[in-house]
Image (cartoon, rainbow, N blue to C red; front, top):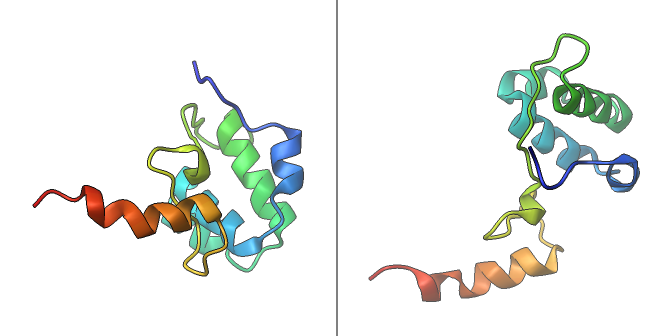
Length: 98
């Protein structure tokens, strides 16, 4: 089983349409995300919930973690603003194999 699960608080804090669509691509695939790119955040979050719960004809995804919680941490956008990911991007070259 998963150690972490998306709860109501997680979805209440998810308000960015671009991030919701990239999350949907991570969970449901590019075709699903592209087909719902114009949908409201609320709709995209519902589809994400359906995948995580295996409801409404969606195949259940049990081990998903948001990119923010992975190691190394990743951002969902190129616009920055996620401090941990921005800092990792600056030091990552120091860890690259020569």
